Structure formats: C-alpha cells, structure tokens
Image 1 (spheres, helix red, strand yellow):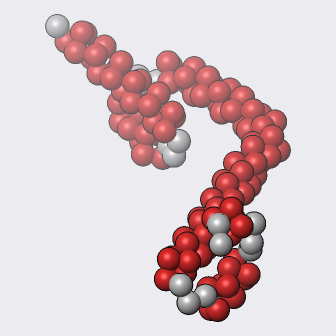
Image 2 (cartoon, rainbow, N blue to C red):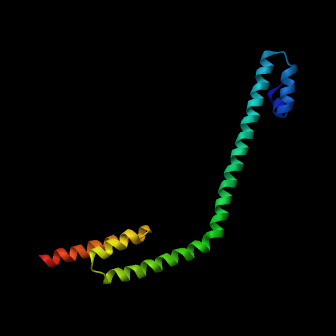
Image 3 (spheres, rainbow, N blue to C red):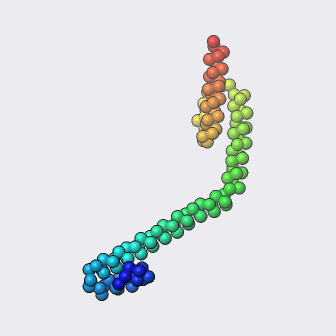
Length: 127
C-alpha cells in the first residue's frame, strides 16, 4: 500500500490496518502515518489553545481599557496633590512617617525624593 493511500485514512482505520497487516515494512509505514496524524493533531490543538489564550487577553484588555485609563488618571492626580503637599513639608521625621504609611511605589518614590531634598537643604544651611 502506498504512503499516499495511508495519508487519506484516519487514525482508527490505520490502527485496524496495522492489526491485520503481517508485512513488517508495511507495518512500519502505517505506524509512521499514525505518528504523523498524532503530531498534526497536537499542532492543531496547540494552535487553537494559543489563539484562545491571546484572544481572551485582547478581549480582557478591551473591556478594562476605559477603567484602567480612569484609574491611571486618578493616580496621576493623587500623585500631583501629594507632590504639592511634600513641597511644603520640611521635617524629615514627618516625611519618614509618611513614607512608612505609604503603600504605592510612586508615592514612596516622591516621598524619598522630598526627604533627600530636605536633607540637602539642611546640609546646605549648615555650611
């Protein structure tokens, strides 16, 4: 039987053919055709899984886009208010207490910068 004829059969038909075939070379070709079918099926499943995974992510991004934009705008406004408050603060201990209570990275970054600014002013005033 030719390899082209084996390519047109499904896995079940190939397994039945394998059971009734006695020729070793023919059995080898049938097993090879079965492995090829299994490899193709695995590739199709992986492609389907990958496309579902990325499609879901894109859909999730579309659904949350407006909400995340609003949240980012609120965070920027809060950071701007905090920066204004920090400009008026000149006590390192007060800033350190504020740093310990801050939870967000960007807030902590601004507070650390304010602490460095106040310390630099203290050093400059001492010299």
